[in-house]
Amino acid sequence: MTGESHRCEVLVVGSGPGGAVTASTLAGAGRDVIALEEGPHLRLDSCAPFSVAEMVQKYRSGGLNPAMGAPKAPLVEGCCVGGGSEINSGLYHRTPPEMLALWRERYQVRHLETGDLLPHFEANESALSVQLNPGAPAPAAVKMKMGADRLGWRSLEVPRWFKYGEGVSPNGLAIGTRQSMTETLIPRALASGCRLLAGVRADRVARENGRWRVMAARDGAPVIIDADAVFLCCGAIQTPALLRRSGITTNVGNTLALHPTVKVVAVFDDELNGDVPDVAAQQVKEFAPDISMGCSISSLPYIALAMTDHPDAKIDVGRAWRGMSIYYAMITGPTGGSVRNVPLSRAPIVRYPLEARHLRSLSKALRELCRLLFAAGATHLYPSISGFPVLRHEDELSRIPAELSRRSTNLMTIHMFSSCPMGEARDRCATDSFGQVHGHRNLFVNDAGLLCTAPGVNPQGSVMAIARRNAMQFLNSL
Ligand SMILES: Cc1cc2nc3c(=O)[nH]c(=O)nc-3n(C[C@H](O)[C@H](O)[C@H](O)COP(=O)(O)OP(=O)(O)OC[C@H]3O[C@@H](n4cnc5c(N)ncnc54)[C@H](O)[C@@H]3O)c2cc1C
Image (cartoon, rainbow, N blue to C red):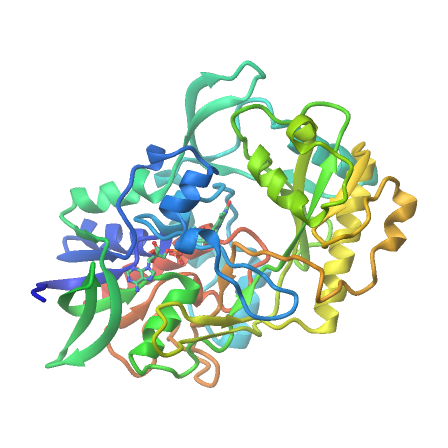
């Protein structure tokens, strides 16, 4: 089969937040850059947000990637130009200073004070229009704040990457456009001369004649790219899988961390959901950094899916869904997971076993979330535990077991990290402090896998700031 070959100074593999920052920073500085992306190049508005069509077009495997372990925790990854930024909620946090301190101390990451990241936070916030919602908060957010206020708990509205200015909806919500990578940094990279190869999957990377060669494929036909330097930005699952396929395994794919998440469907007497699903940006930080709580998308299909855990529930979701809302509680999970390849399969095997103490943390997270929702006026609560009875009153919280069941609890996660941790501690880190793979000159990781542990907050702000810092360090080293 005939194929194609390309040559460039810097090859960036993966075009999610890590890859898009890397490509736009390097191309903007005049480097000759190719960005390679396995998924298709689609506009942000190619389908309705949070729809089934979006899952088909933009999610890896339609959103069905299991992590092996008990309880089961499906992993959700984007697979399109822009990666996870095309499908996410746009909730923004800077990296908490206590996390940076932990990473400096335990992983010996150099130059990782908040002050080192500040210019990168600011540049990315400006590029993505990170801001608070200027309109009325979503009704589900109002409920969450009300519950937190009544209990005296700390909660906040989280800024989002969003361009407002398109008026307000009939119920007072500000209208605008979420700022994904295809809306921001990908066009910026292309305008600076970056070449984008979409629909091309990298299989392996190898050192040949003093350069890096990436063996890839487009619809089964080979694509070869030779580059002086390669940045792997395929996300915390696919980057370690690619490195391991290439025979690079030291501290690669051994310490995956997640934010295991449990959900609750809450029923209220008043109407919360309109026809267009809205992201409610309120979060509760009373138990941070161990536990965080927030609001999930509550469209009819998402609520119907969540209610499949409760086949005996006497509720007609099709009629009642406007008064139902999904909330989550997540724990800052351990670095106990692994990513491994299996022969003849393109999909790596991901394992994420949880210990009894994590199931106790999840139980506490669930119980406190239910307490808050009752304080907010919920009349019925349906936790994401198969067959669990409906909760109707705070007195029934004692029915939640002190340790969640491995068999019947349904977890999920949309946040993955730490599979290729950065730092100078050679016994535990895959890369140096700036993402260069230890022992492999000019081969870099620049995605969520670098975060040494789960950060306990929505991660894209951290992924992008660290990626920009590393790309600038690379430019300075030339
Ligand atoms: C549904 C959802 C909601 C989320 N909500 C938020 C939120 O509100 N706030 C927040 O901060 N974070 C959120 N996140 C997490 C955030 O999107 C991720 O942390 C972020 O996208 C990680 O960026 P990344 O560059 O490391 O990887 P990714 O975004 O996963 O990008 C990796 C890219 O590499 C491509 N790729 C993979 N393998 C190959 C290969 N072999 N060859 C070529 N290309 C390859 C993939 O197709 C993908 O496009 C959410 C995630 C999801 C899934």
